[in-house]
Image 1 (tube, each protein chain N blue to C red):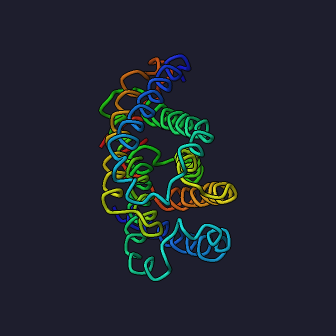
Image 2 (image 1 turned 180 degrees about the horizontal axis):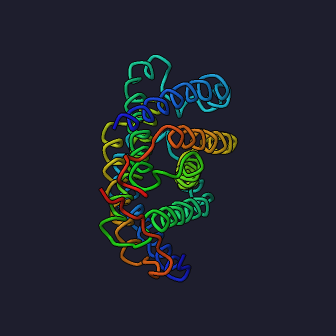
Image 3 (image 1 turned 90 degrees about the vertical axis):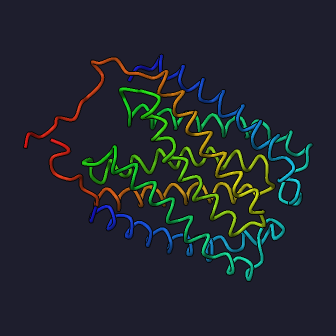
Length: 146
Length: 137
């Protein structure tokens, strides 16, 4: 694995995921979230847990980068974005389960699912655009002759 | 395709019963500590189809990732994939914990059980799904 490129891809993915999360979930969906105020921490309480938010995003970005690096060692924005969309579908499934057990609105559910898909697709494309292992580190699967 | 469907069904059945046992039985008292964060029992039952669809989507995506990239690796490759994806999900869980006032122990128990769940899902998928001949050597 090319750790230098991996690190650059991870930092770029983290930066994008955090910024997108702030804009999409924090700003664009702010009104929708306020329809169910009892579900969220107060501003002060959220401030006390901000480091957990940052750490959670770092973990997400790191492991998304790791999955892309293992799965698509040759890199490429298209292949990594496709993989990341599949990962986003896992999160979308989890969002649906959350909707069934927590008093979220359908607007919030739709916003979360669309957000996950956009966020992961772009993050995957960024990772794929940056991370490309050296040819010597890529193991190709040999095609079986007919 | 047949093995894809078999892997999907087996993993789905496991996830369904694991989810019921964990959330409905083992963690019932922990959830009861924060009733304002959850729907009532009757409301949850009326939205139960969302749990079924959500679990199906989650398992479908997992098997699709495995089938398109990790196929041929067997049980260990499935476990590795399950582990990686669940650690990323723990990151998401931590981010949500920063926003919603869940009890800390719910995050800890949820993360440990999620890891066990996805490792077993990975093992099931890895044991059942085999790539079509001609795609790998």
